Image 1 (cartoon, one colour):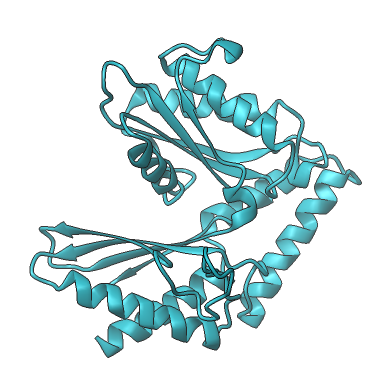
Image 2 (cartoon, rainbow, N blue to C red):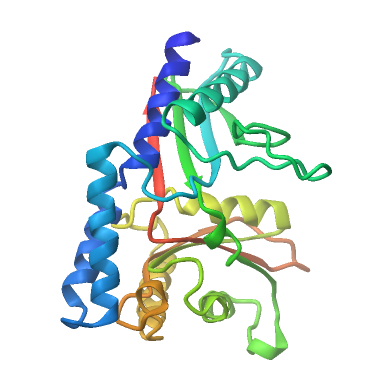
Amino acid sequence: MLKLRDGIVELYRKVATSLPPDVEDALKAAYAVEKKGSNAKQALQVILENIRLARETARPICQDTGVPVFYVKTPVGLSQLELENTIIEATRIATEKIPLRPNAVDIITDKNSGDNTGLGFPVIYISDTLSSTLTIDLMLKGSGCENMGQTYKLPIEELIANRDLDGVGKCVLDTVYKAQGKGCPPYTLGVGIGAAKDQVARLAKEQLMRRLPDINESEVLFKLEKKLLHEINSLGIGPLGFGGKTTALGVKIGVNHRHPASYLVDISVSCWANRRGRLIW
């Protein structure tokens, strides 16, 4: 597992220091449409320069290197326990080597572990696959935008939100409105809909791993994603809350079946630095 460990360390380096091309392209497109001399255009100019410098110097894009979230698909027969231990060891090495800011704080003692490891830290989801290939997806999820996320139980009278996709849309708009430019927009929003709180929270965050240009397998959800993106960008909150045309870069929706008595919606918010990457082994 030594070579795999080193591969995960390099995955950390890539994700922490180099934004995915689709996200960078979307930010460049946002810069192009903002008014010359506006606060929005200046904010995006600073963001794009930061992206360039981080890549050239191999330094983290943001001081908050976030909570590491791993989505792992492993061939049947590969030890999941050994794989988890390898990820934890790689996390310790990456924290010192890249470096990453230590973010793992003990709930009881309030002490920082100093190496980004601890109870449930990093977050690791492992599932079996019939493929012979090991796939490791990593997201570094900043806490400023994480704090902007919301969970809703439909119906909600004050939002006039019923148990339907129109109600889901109202929840998404409410989340963006409540954030009021905090959490470093332009955002990417992941939406999870289903039966249980833990299920929709995981599903919403998984949507942030999708590329911005991808097309939802459901035509209904694809149209809703486009509609919501347009409506969010009509709010005028803009980059970093300075006003402007681009409050969000994308909206991605995932669904599971729900219970007849439950209609749960979770919305996971990413800042402009939607840091994600993949290692195939």
